[in-house]
Length: 318
Length: 167
Image 1 (tube, chains in turn green, brown):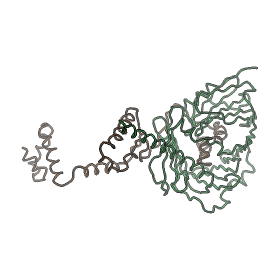
Image 2 (cartoon, chains in turn purple, brown):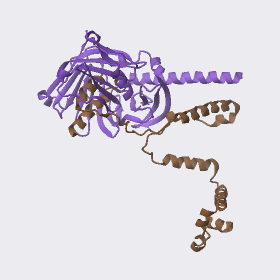
Image 3 (tube, helix red, strand yellow):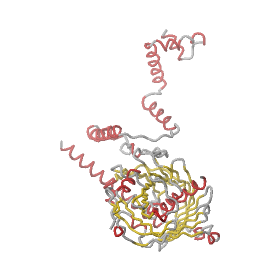
Image 4 (cartoon, chains in turn purple, orange):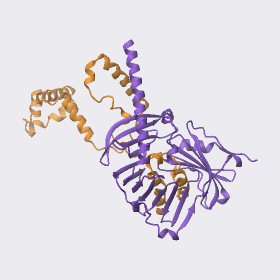
């Protein structure tokens, strides 16, 4: 009996150590994403949709400078510099600019303590697999409830750089995948690679600036009480979108997934989406009309969770 | 008859002599059992048995192309696995010989080496339209996945435009 007790104790201690080890890998991935410069090609897959993209990421003292470019079909680009994101869309000759005004740097979105993450996900270390020529440690994040998706990550054993990731549904099927096919990590990367190929051309394009400012939606009568354990309010703002400057935006996150709530007056919309669910990759969207307003919930969480958040939105007239 | 069977297996029968054998095998369960038994003996004599055979079958299975269907993992299988894990742990103490099998603990099914194929999501939701682009762009900034993948997840925002153009 005593042997069994010792054995069980040893096993549980080993399990705790193993989980700590897996969590420390997540930390390594975060640090690598912040500190490393790299350039490479990756493939994004979601359902029958596949895109090949080139990415350049240069880490700097004032945040990262990055460029993402699609390699198939029409060249579309995302250029991120510090807290500004520019999205070049030649199809509609538009540049969408999203500048952060709340000074929240990206790594601040990390769970304050990785242990919090362990409360909602079972984090385990898998085997070592080869991705894009690099030996990668795999990490599995299995959600403990059906409110969030699972994740499988593959990080370079030497640098911690994330080279492949999958978002898994409750049946453990990959609904979205990012995988590098080629990457060079570290070394000198020419800053010229960060320049948009549309830089000159886009001067004649339409520029849509989000101009987000902090606000309180509760003050204008809105209440959102999502019944999603672990999801905490991250930020709340008002932004300009699709010609309307009155779009409320609230973000909730459990440290790994985020859910956004957008509230805007219907009067300002030129076209209204069909109410109900829609999706893009691992992102689920739920659209609903409340009191002459359009409420759109967007998040990398199962459709049920997104709808749950949408259902919790209420408007009370003053 | 069994003599004929043995001769056939060794390739010593002519076509005419062998012709009645397959229908007989189909009818006669006893004969089928003899057939299995002879093969086992033959394999044993040739040394293709036990672990070797298992290893060969496993290798062949591994070499099989991945079926593009979602891996299902039901509760019963998970439970069975947990039970097995516990049993294995106890057996580790009782039966020292068990310890010589390396890497056993790593072979949990959740983290198996086989890549999960990308599967279609449940078709309850329609594909997001052009109008969703602004929401996706605004939302993406706050997605914690950025902290792990940098700008890469923004592909969701631009991937959207192509489908909008196609329409």
